[in-house]
Length: 282
Ligand code: SAM
Image (cartoon, rainbow, N blue to C red; front, side, top):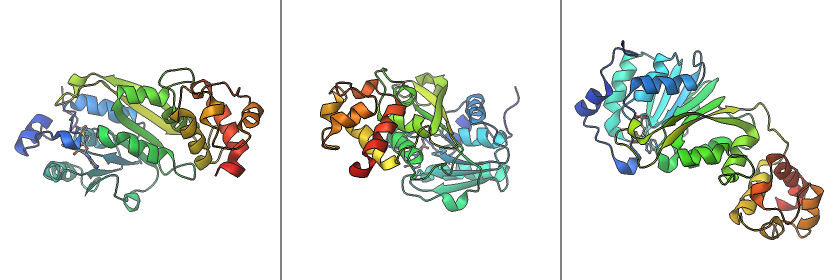
């Protein structure tokens, strides 16, 4: 079967550039270009779109994104060893790949991107949740991105799409579902990666909603949800006691029994509570 591009197979790229995987950098590479093309397709129609990729490594997903028609890929990579391999990809797609060397948690990439912007990444697991929370919690909405297509440990993916009553339901589900629509689009076994990680993985695709599902101040909602799930086995009248003095009345006013636990409360009622206590709890 013809390849997705005229570049060499990733195994050759890795051996030629000496890219032995480093655990400290969360390096579990995807070497199957059919798979990286599938992930790129799950990101949506990339034509006329800039794509931000975190952690391109040897460039398997980068090649998938470019072959799928992305207008411009901006890739942030911390491991300088990967830069020569990425330069070869940039040469094969003139003017369409910008590689920035640095830490994705510290670098401001906004000057390099033009809307519409999508984000796609096989993330290093150690920074995946932190980056996701940043992308989901800007003060204003809609955010700078249209969609996120991200690899997570399957357990984290399940927390993102969990519904009230699920064991995995918590802060991450609320943050993800309040202003976006997350869906698990691909499940991957450890053997899909080189080297294989200990756990299974899943790709989650998030579409940014034009506006939040329910109105609420982001900082207040974050605070309420963090307190409620910090002691998830406790009744809400206890876990939220420090929020406002008359918490039981506030809960009742929002259709929540003071004896309910956080895991039973849906997004609509968390937002109602955030609105109800906004004046005092910020
Ligand atoms: N995208 C490649 C693939 O699918 O084969 C590599 C994925 S690997 C799971 C994660 C990549 O993120 C590695 O290349 C690693 O060097 C890079 N990385 C780790 N920490 C980073 C950070 N703080 N900022 C940017 N890149 C980072």
